[in-house]
Figure 1 (cartoon, rainbow, N blue to C red):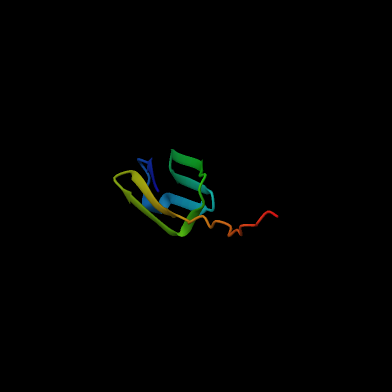
Figure 2 (cartoon, helix red, strand yellow; figure 1 turned 90 degrees about the vertical axis):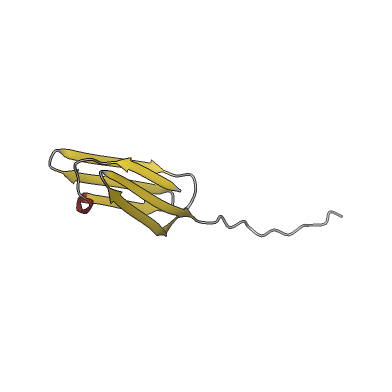
Length: 79
């Protein structure tokens, strides 16, 4: 999954990114430039694989999705 955000006028040191389970929060502030976004995600995110790159005012996040573990079931014979 890739999330792209335009944030002109800030430096990468001014950007905070938080990724938790089903939620991504972006925040940046420098002078009169302020950016904030809360992004709910339907799929469970693997926060340990997140990579963020900021270049020419554009932040790009690459996040891998956690594989949904399906509950193991057992077929029951109806008597």
